[in-house]
Image (cartoon, rainbow, N blue to C red):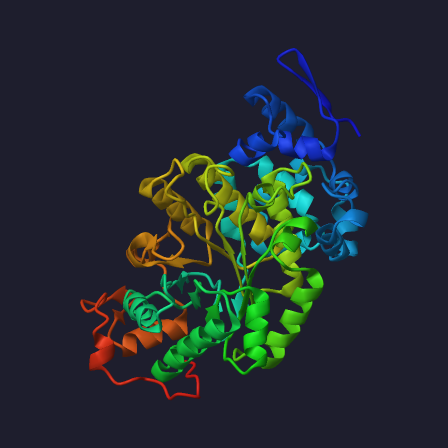
Length: 467
């Protein structure tokens, strides 16, 4: 395996696939802090040149963490569809890129060959793409998923309504839910991040969200984003919920720091299939983002982008309903500024889609990061063009419980209008029946949650209405 090249008369040699992948990555502060980033733009270009001629077979034989040492590696490698892999294993990364970007290559053809890829291959090809390449390639791929309702259809842009409250006040949470619904948010999921992660509080919030959705006949799904073990205990005690949530990572050590293993998630997946309220078949909700392994010192010398691709390979095992990327959530120690957040978001969206996942995006940022509202708006416009399945809906863009900046209800409505996209069909019908939308556009009463005090509920508690 030749990992050498000359650039501008200077020789470059990379000692391993892991080093090559790290040096070929676009600049990320997490890689710089870890001491694995390219030392110059010239070295980065040299690494990309060498990576372009590496074969897919060489990448499979050289995962960034060996098969024997890491559960995530084993999950990814064991899932490879061998007949498909055998047909493409002699392709170089350059040839894979050319195949994906060729205007004659369809999304279905890309999805077919993706079953023969490992996460290192997915990361490698993304490293050779420009931002426009990532948008164009992503726009070809549609990955649909269904719990109670389905998202990912052409022409549809859904939203997770995120009604967090710093004291987990049910009254405050439902006030945010009602406001978000009046802006057309909530067709992806009503997802509550609890401040207090206990079984009792999780049960309280699960019941409140479920009862509200039942009462108003809202065609959507509910989720409380406690730790997976809290959710499992709550459901075993009879609490109603539609999908299970968990943050996941790209190394076994990072997942252990999150308090999870593949075995635990296997058990959770079986439990939600038996005891969850949604029809499915997709019943898991994962959150990911570049840099979690670096922040936990669980990266094993691998770059944060490649580890994020491995996160998707791990998540694929559970055929999830949603995967939400929050690469800007950690801070400048992993992604320093708006430019790095935008690039990472485009990479992650593409890598998740190429892995076969129903990707939603939250190009968020913390207040100590060198990013602002304009960076975030640039990101969501690019990602909407790229075909993101959904975005977040947060009151006023500012999450008062988690203390970070995300997309607002107003951003969501603007994106749909800008790109002529619609809500999930059943949800749009519900909005029309509530008088909130007509012909795909919000009406004059949008943003007025008092309509819930003026109207009679459209559903019947205990029997979910499906449009």
